[in-house]
Image (cartoon, rainbow, N blue to C red; front, side, top):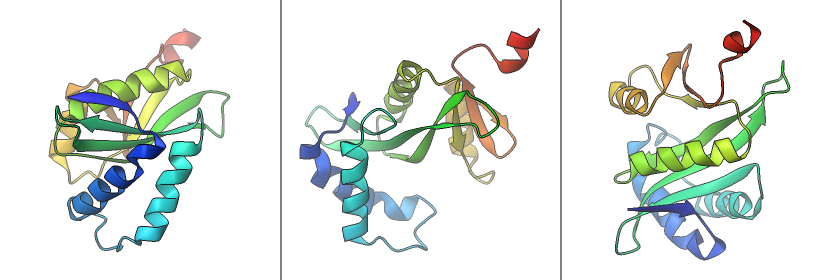
Length: 152
């Protein structure tokens, strides 16, 4: 399994994968608009530094997972965090998560915040195995010292 940042040449494969996997997301009550999906993915691929499309590919070059990664700032702090706009994988999920941590660390994020429904224990266990812990309605992975540890 290979994980990398998607390029424009990957656009069709990424959109096909996201469309095929849509019913597994829990968001399938909102139908996909192919034109909007394509425009959104194009914008993420072309945006530099704060948003990227991470893909996991099998040995044959087939997309097996997509993580739409973004960086934002806590509105009450100068600290930045990474979050997933969308994360779906039927293979390569662990390698995507590792790549996401590396991506966020290179962008000087203090943590990764991922929203996970409380009724999705498999996703929660997967993230816990990857170093995340539940904080309120999100799963959080600290990439630097925790803020309370810095203050001590």
